[in-house]
Every structure is written in structure tokens, then in C-alpha cells.
Amino acid sequence: MLESLIGFRNGGTRGKMELGGPLTKKPKVGLALGGGAARGFAHIGILRTLLANGIVPDIVVGTSIGAVVGGSYAAGHLDTLESWARGLLPRNIFSYLDIRLSGSGLIGGSKLAAQLEASFGDIYIDELPLKFAAVSTEVNTGHEIWVTNGKLVDAVRASYALPGIFEPVLIGERWLVDGALVNPVPVSAARALGAEIVIACNVSTDVFGHGTIISATSRAELEPALADEPPPAPEKRGFGKFFSAERTVKREFFGSAGRPGISTVMVEAFNIMQDRITRSRLAGDPPDVLISPRVGKVGWFDFHRAEEIIAHGTRAAERNIESIQEAINLLSPTTNQTPGTAQPTQP
Image (cartoon, rainbow, N blue to C red; front, side):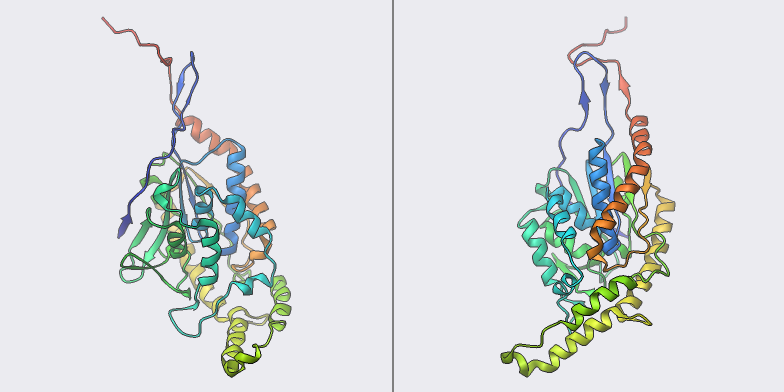
């Protein structure tokens, strides 16, 4: 069952008019950006390539990391997101993990929220220059929610709140979690918002058997960061058990080379579910063009591999540019009426 929090405004006119020539009405292009954690940085490369080829989305809908990238683009902050992503180092990952030993998620999410707040500030979705929606799931009902108004940062946080990992986000009277539970690649939402052509970006293909929480190479890079975590300050040594437990949780979060950690098991299960839902929904409502970057060997928390992941997105988009342009041309009817010239009436 679908519910929507509606509150968007139309974007600018995208049609092209040439004085003295035929009128060409360009179809509204919708971009559906799927979930996939670190693999979602590929959406940055996809967007860059589309824009470089004159393909400007009129509608952007994102699920999970797709909402982060899509929201950044819609708000005019894609450069900021890309710069931050390319600057991430293995040890930086831990600085964003505010581990919670109680509550409804292993990660509170306040540190990531602060990063988003610094970028989005008080931007509201209904103030964006194009139509945007972030897909989430309501915990109490299982309903699919399209957040199309309110603060952008809240909508994005709710969309990536993976159950058990991040705490749910309260919007209005609803507790919302990751939209990938119900619509991992939101083609249907893009169409509902008026897209005549939908370009879908699925970054979660070929993900099984590759250590999907974090790659072996990345695990080796992260071990020094775990070992180098400073002991608690003298005034906090009374909380020694807490800090020791937090370090233990961080180690358990990623597991070891021979044994999956708690997050690995949770994410692998989530991958299986997301893959089945994605296949089903794309079969029932296929996009006009599907872009699938080859990022299956990238782990969910391999955020420090942004440069490589973005490049995968760029190459995937380049492989599909011709198909996208053909689809746009097919749905771009040309009339013979010239601007300012009346057509003769028939007797």
C-alpha cells in the first residue's frame, strides 16, 4: 500500500523553441536512484555524465543513498557531496559511527545528520527547483512513503535509515526507515511525479559472495584505525566499560576475515530481500533505460573508495547515453507550427 506526503512545485520549462523552425517538446525526464550504501556514490558519476551530454532530469526520486545523491543534486550541492566523498579515508568511517548500546539502532546517526545539515541546512523540498521525492518505509504499517515536502535533511535521513543499523526517523507522526524495504529502485515514484521517460540506476546487482559489508582489502585498511582508537580521557575513565564495549561493538560491526560480523549478517539478509524486490518491481514497471554500474565487489561501507565507485558510475552511464538519447528523441514529437505563426484554418 502506498502513501505519499505531497508538496512539490513544478520545475522550469525544459522545452526547446527555435524561432522560425519547428517546435520540439522534450519529454519530462525522471531519474530513479536506487539504494546500495557506498555503491551509491556511482550515482554521482551517472549524474555528471548525463549532464555533460545535455540530459537534465526534470524529476529526481531516490531511495536510501539514492536520496542522498539525488537530494544533493536537487539542492545544488552535488559538488559538495562529491568533494566530501572523495576526501573520505578508511579511518574517517569510524568518526561517523556514533555507536549506540541501547535504542532501536546500532548507529544513532547524529554525526551523519550533522554532515547533511552542514550541506542542506534549512532547505525545504518544496523550495527545490525540480520535483524531488525520497522513498521511505513506515515502520508501523509497512507502507511505502514518498516524502515530497518538509526539510530535505529529514527526508534523506529517513530514506537511508537501514533497520537495526540506524535509528528510525520521526517525520510528522510517522516513524520511517529505509525505503529499500519496499521500493529499492523507485521507478514507479518517478512516473507518478510526471516523468515521461524514466532512467533507473540500480547499484545493487551482482552483490552476493563479495563480502558486501566491506571488502577484504578495506578490512585490512580499517584494522589500524580500530587499534589506534584512543583510550577514554582521564575524566571519563569511570566509563571505561562503556568505551571498551563501544570498541568491541565496532569490531563486531565489521566482523573478521573468517567470520561475518553482526552488520554483515544483517546486510547480507537485506541484500537478498532487496534483490528479490528490485527484480519483481522492475519486471512489473520497467524503466525506459536501466543503468547498472559494475560495483558488486564494493562493500556497503567502502565509502573511502569513492573515486573508484564514481568512475564505475561514469562508465555505466556512458554505455547508455545513446539509448537514453534515442528514447528522448522517440518521445519528442515535432510539430510544423512556428512560434508566433498561426496555422491556416480549413474551409
